[in-house]
Length: 241
Image 1 (tube, rainbow, N blue to C red):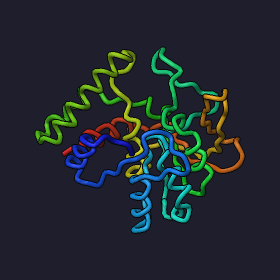
Image 2 (image 1 turned 60 degrees about the vertical axis):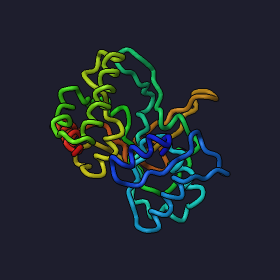
Image 3 (image 1 turned 120 degrees about the vertical axis):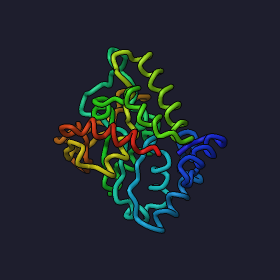
Image 4 (image 1 turned 90 degrees about the vertical axis):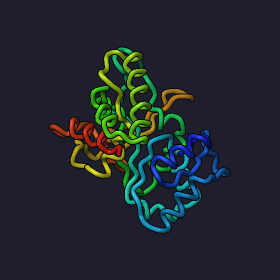
C-alpha cells in the first residue's frame, strides 16, 4: 500500500493495526520496500489471504523477491480484470481504465503467472451496486469519532461521485468487495476463466478473462447473488464502530 506520513498515522490510529509504506510508482526488480518486507514477514508467521485493492506492485515484488512464500498465500483477491472485449463506462463516460491492472502490468503478469489461487473482482461486478447517502447514515448514527471520520469522508466522496456521474445513485464499493469475498464468498456469482493480457497498443493493455482461454485459470466474479447486493451494503456500513 502507499500512503503519506500524516495520513498513515491517522489510518493507524483509526484501525489500530500495522500500516506499511509501499512503492509510490511501478516498481522495478531492484526495488524493495517496507510493505514487501511486511508481507513477507507476515506470511512467514502464518498463511494468509491477500486483498490487493490497488496496483499490484507490492504483490509483484513479493513474488519476485520471495517466491518461496507464495505457497503461504491462501488466495489473492484482485480488484481488476474484465470480460473479453468489454470497455468500461460509467453512464456515458468512458472508456475508463482498469486502474489497478493498467498501472503496473508487469507486476500483474508476475502474479497471474504464479500458482497462487486468484480471485478477480472488478468493474463488471462492482458497477452493479452503489452506496448511497442514505446508506451512509448508518455510520453517522454510531456516534464515535472514528465513525464520524468515515461518515464525513464517505459522504464527501459520495457527493463528488454523484455530481460527476449523475447516472449513479451513489459510489461503487470496488475495494470493499475484495474484503467481502474473504468473509462471504456466497454473495458472489463466479466462474473459472482463463486469462490473457491483450496489448491494444504499446501504452495500453487489457486483462481479459474468458472460459475459453487456455492456460492458468482465475476465479472471475460476474455478479451478486439474489439479495446479496443489499446485504453487502448493509455489512459495509455496519462494519464501522
